[in-house]
Length: 134
Image 1 (cartoon, rainbow, N blue to C red):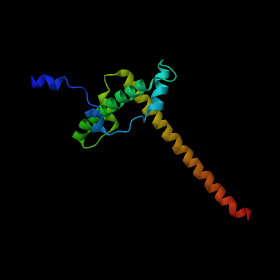
Image 2: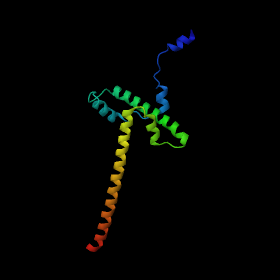
Image 3: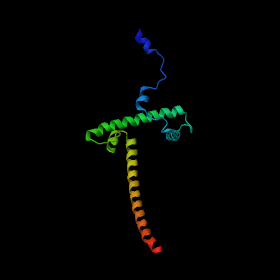
Image 4: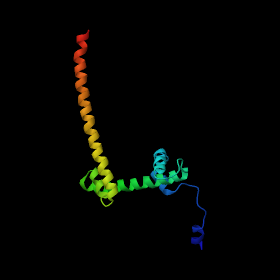
């Protein structure tokens, strides 16, 4: 009978084990999640409980994904983008979106590199002109 009484005890007001073990700051993604929830059809100002639940779900998913990627990467000794792509390979929507974002990131890197080299060339031109103006 003592076992059944321990099962029927009231829930404690202490945070759950998952909240204390992760020790993460809550509400970090609150604004972004509110905007995303609105974009997917929720109210402009969703309930704080809904946003908190979504944040918990997202953080748990990302944490789980990172841990799995670390397991895969540890076999080679390093973590790479390919480890994440491998994990989502069966979800074509996620895989396509990730490859699209990665290629866009590469394009932005190239554009920055071109911009910086052009900026350096202009700076050198103006540095040469400045002493002549004195």
